[in-house]
Every structure is written in structure tokens, then in C-alpha cells.
Amino acid sequence: MRLLLVEDNVPLADELVASLGRHGYATDWLADGRDADYQGSSEPYDLIVLDLGLPGKPGLEVLRDWRARGLTTPVLVLTARASWAERIEGLKAGADDYLTKPFHPEELLLRIQALLRRAHGLANQPLLRAGGLELDEGRQSCRKNGEEIALTAGEFRLLRYFMLHPGQLLSKTHLAEHLYDGETERDSNVIEVHINRLRGKLGRELIETRRGQGYRFGGQP
Image (cartoon, rainbow, N blue to C red; front, top):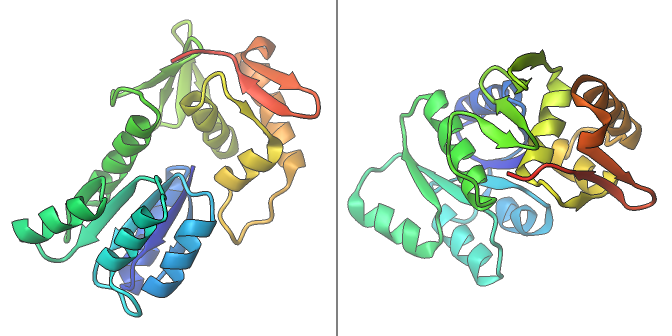
């Protein structure tokens, strides 16, 4: 899953990018509201974490403009202020969730997980279930027929994306756009390698290849 973090506090941003990366999220970081306004609308993010106190353009104004242009990406707002009036203003502007600083990184991760599942019409449960599999996002492993199967970081990122989009036809270009951040070279051959490894661990029937079109994870949520 590819996220955009908009936060002008550099030490906090560094901490969050590292934490998100350890949990399998490809994260782009911006510190200026004007840059966020443009990039949030032009890149295919799965979720945006937006601070309100930004230089260049206030976060609330950025959010309003995104929603006015029809951007439906889930947005989790960060703020150092905890007033009810500001929370209500942010929700009216189109925020999907709110987190007040200071916060524990684990709470941010759980809120992100919940928002992503909600965006795909899935229940927020301890395990992600689809295609006869149970995916433990905290341990980055899955179970099939009660057997626990270890995953590499790349396999985990890809399987999580498939399980959040069961039955959908996903091209290699689409997968690359959502599995890598903007600074990483997007090699479709690496995706093929991860798919072959997942088939070897989980069964070839779970991931269908449509020649010239992409891949389809055959399970249903």
C-alpha cells in the first residue's frame, strides 16, 4: 500500500516513515502544503496522513481543495491542537479520521489499517481474511488451512494488496504504483518473482494470470 505523509516536523516524519516502512507501507513524504495539494491529487495513493499546521498552504485548505476536486482517497488528519471545534471543522472538510499529537506510532498504524479496510468494504478485525487465507499484518505472516506460512517483506506487501482487492484484475503497472514509493525504481520483474514465490507457498490457483492484462487474486473476502 502506498501512502502520502504530509508533515513538516522532520524528526517526527523520519520516525513515521521508518515505522510505516517496517510495516510494509511505501511512504512518500512532503513538508509543504502546496506540494501536497498537487501530489495528493496526481499520484495514486491508498491513504494520506495530513498534518494541519503546514507551511505554504494550511492542511485544512489542502483537504478542502482535494475533496472539491473529487479526491476520494482516505485522509487521516494529524494535529497538535485538540479542540472539538477544530475536529468538527476537519471532519466537515472531508477528513476520515483524526489523531491528536502526541500519539503512539502503534495507534497510527492501527488507524491506518482500519481506514484501509473500511475503504475496501471490509470489517476491521485482527486478521485480514480472503481466499481461504488469514493475514496477520503485525507479524507479516499468513495462515492457510491452519498452517502458518512465513512471508518475506515483498511477499507480504503484495499479498496484502491482493487480499484487499479480491477478484479485481490488477495490472503490473497498477501494482507497481501502489507497492513502491516515488523514489523507488519500479521493476515489474520483481513483482513477477514475488507472485511466483507466493504461488509456491500458497498454491498456484490463488493468483490467476490474465495474459496481457495482469493478475487476479481469486479469493473473496
